[in-house]
Image 1: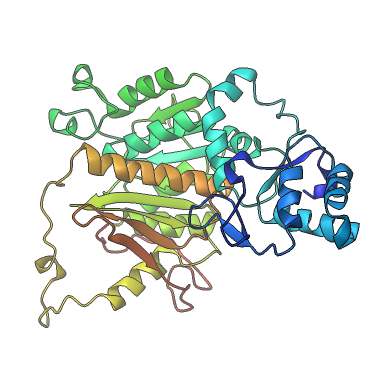
Image 2: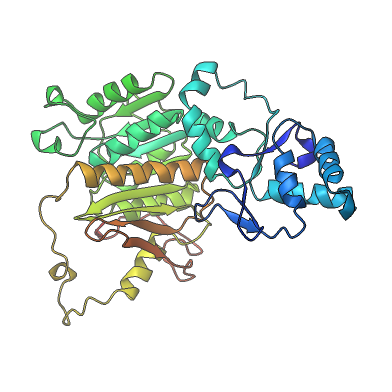
Length: 395
């Protein structure tokens, strides 16, 4: 999208510029990762962003800047280039762009606040600010696991307008689930989780398609079958998915399987969960950054548990037959998982995959962040990745 193709270029409302006390121009808000500062000794860049208010075409913007700064004798190509630079940086939209016909008036009203958030975080030129929402509407997501993390992720995806979410879950609702699995109610006790989840999600947003099946993933081939669109009776199968979201923690090797299967199929994927007060999400895309196996190997090499020879690492971080969790940790992990899906589906924010991030609820401001380069000796994303049921790994 070039500035010449825009009917009425304007600075995005969320990126509205202001002048600093020393005469510089700040644009894109004060949020780290979005905002920028531009030196403007002659003041004409400020005039430019003021003129780009959505009421003028490109030629009229150029004429307005030239009119207000005759002493500078600014060449028109220089003004256009400044407009182009602002556009390529993601600060400009076309106020004259028509909303996509595929999105109904009801949908535009429903997702109007979400569109503006995506527009705020978006740093690439678009034909329309509604383009990311349209991508979500067309998206197909496979969600494995609909407990605390998966239920929260499903809720956020459906509320955000993802077109199709297919849920896979083998269990029934139990009383001990209700402290964290907020998709379910007491009336759902004894009901298959997938049935209760579908009812709740469909009641949340009738403009999306939510399908599901009661099924347990027991081997890599089960994930391959699901990703290829294979389903059991009563689900919505028949086509592949744009993203896999893993919110299940069993069998223990399921993350390794997901990594291998997604590498073979070329499917972006994400997984999330909690480990006591540590909540995190891993985001991966084949061919872009480290895979799950790369990241895990790098983390094992990085950490120093100071264990004695032969001592099991469970001594440093014991595992119990239950997961210590409440609605907050489960909800946070699910929301992080949904955010990862939105990032993979529409590229907002523009973050490269191949990382794990999150937060430590014990220490405000202490982030969880793991990132490493792709490893050329990685047994998973090396020259010939192969799907195999390897030994179990902790999430």
